[in-house]
Length: 375
Image (cartoon, rainbow, N blue to C red; front, side, top):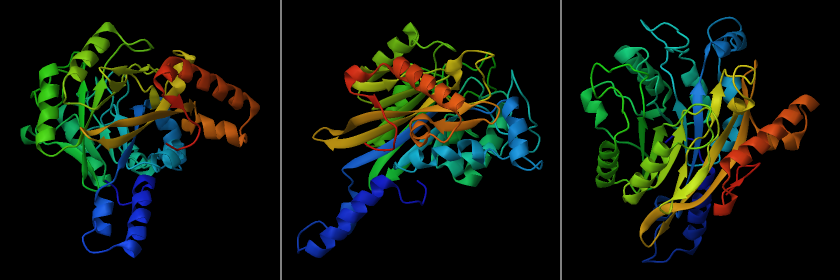
């Protein structure tokens, strides 16, 4: 966890200070009250795919020296700062010594993306994707090195065999959240070592989740890079895997990436599956694909503790939209409410909101779009 004070944590800090004035012998101490939150909140976002088109703009933002992606993600800070733990999906390897930049089909993107991820307020990222092996093991090591350097945790790829068996987790008071990451494909690339990146395998996922439980995890969140690109409907494979995983007691929440468009949120075996969070940041445009590639969301999840342990208590989502050529990720609701952008952009934002709400299609299960960070 980062050192900044989150909204969820601050609520309990206030409660603890009130308890100090009222404490009597035998009651829970203020420190214990902080350590035992009754609610833990998370934010998760979709594909971060810094294609060549974004490099040019990032170079300009940096004044012609290097690359600066912070302006692109800056407007996510209020949303990400409203929760206890914020997670991104970093789809591509980062550049470094001996790992030069490369665009499609094998990506290596500017390592300055890591600084933007930290600046935006992310605590960690999933890294298992169809592009995990684009630069081989050197690319994985460079990517994880940059994330370590900026203080962002990661899961899904590993530098060593020993690293593969570590459990990535986040502590909110005394509540441990474990995060797992797996992908359906490596685009035909065969890893030199099987531990380099996590490929979807039902048994391995369940084993990792149960190992996390044994190590103390109260909550297990699974990121899956799966589905069919540019398809809103989950495939039969996605639906079958989700059912099988959620029949176990190992996983509390599944979030998906890879389709580059929004996919629905459903309850599967009584638990939530967000099949696809869309694009958080990419260089894709409507002219090349479909307007939906500019749509994404910040999934906002609140976990509560019940008689049978921790569970998802509430799910909300905040639609986002990528402004092309400037490659700014704009939260749709607040931008519409402020009304300070040109009329053409307001029209685009309204269309984006409508597309996202239609694709998520989750009103029946009580999951609603929001315009401001709240639960």
